[in-house]
Structures are given as structure tokens and as C-alpha cells.
Image 1 (cartoon, rainbow, N blue to C red):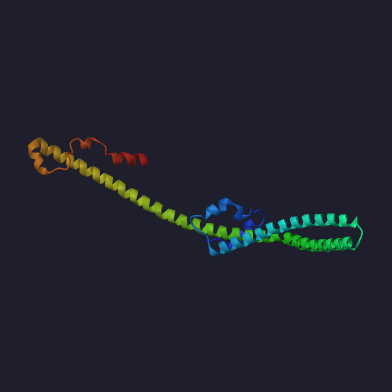
Image 2: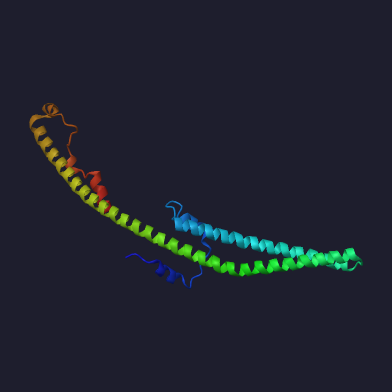
Length: 214
């Protein structure tokens, strides 16, 4: 009975899930079989969110560095008198205010991003689990069919080995009987592909292999 995605979702509810696209094993999992369009879209969305998160962190670091420079400029210009120094101080203050507004906006976005990343990552995991389940079921069905085929082939192989042995024993008896009566020269006219003498005393190699397998 197919498992619904709701069951996968419930199973993951309290689980910590690493970011899938950063996990090399996750990529290897579908390397041969490929994925679905849904998984590809979620992968792209998750990649974009992680890039945005990285960019925001970089931007905040740059803004902090700029603010430090602006603060130094304010202190330096406040030590001097004159309209030009005052103008520079005001400009630095304006830039600091702009930087603070940007930082606040970026930090607010950074607070929300982990939740969004987790949401998309969980959805990606659910879709991955669903695909894995389908693949496991399909592979298991195929394995069972192949196993049944192998079982039937083994039965037929055993039967044919026994038939082969019986024919070899019969040939050995016939050859031995006729050889005793007519001799080697007369037997040459029978066009035998091999001389079965002593074959009935030997165990065929195929039969030995089958016994080992049993």
C-alpha cells in the first residue's frame, strides 16, 4: 500500500534535517535514476535562499565596516572647526542612518530566512522520500520477478543435468556392449563424437557444481 506524503511529513515533524543540497550523499542518491521536476524546482528554490542568506551576511559585514569608517570620520571632523568639517560630519551621520536602516532590514530578513530554508528543505526531503519509496517498491518488484525467474531456471537446469547424465550413461552402456561384441574397428562406423567409455563411473562437473550450490 503506497505511503502518503502526509505520513512522511508526520515522521519528520520532530527531526532535525540537514540542508539536503549541501549533502553530497543526497546528490549521489539520484545520480543514476534522476529526480522529478518538483525536486528540481525545490532544489533551485533552496539554492536561491542559501545564496540570499550568504549575500545578506556579507552585506551586513560590509555595512558594519563602513559604519566604523564613518564613525572615525565623524570623530576626526569634530576635532576640526569650520563649515566644511560640519558638512562632512552631517554627511557621515546621514550615511550611518542609511546604513542602520539597511542593516535593520537585512537582519529582519535574516531572521525569517532560516524558517523559509527549513520549510523548503523539509518539502524537498518529503519529495525525496516519496521518490525513494517509489524506487524501492519498483526495485523490489523487479527483484522478486528476477528471483522467481532464477528459481525456475535452476529447476530446469537440474532437470536437464539429470537428463544429460541419463543419456551419457545410456551411451556408455550401448558403446561398451557393442564394443565388446564388434571391437574397435567396427565401432568406427558409428561416427561417435566422443567415446563414452568409463563416463558412467565419473560424476559430471555440472552435477558437482549443482550439489555445491545446494
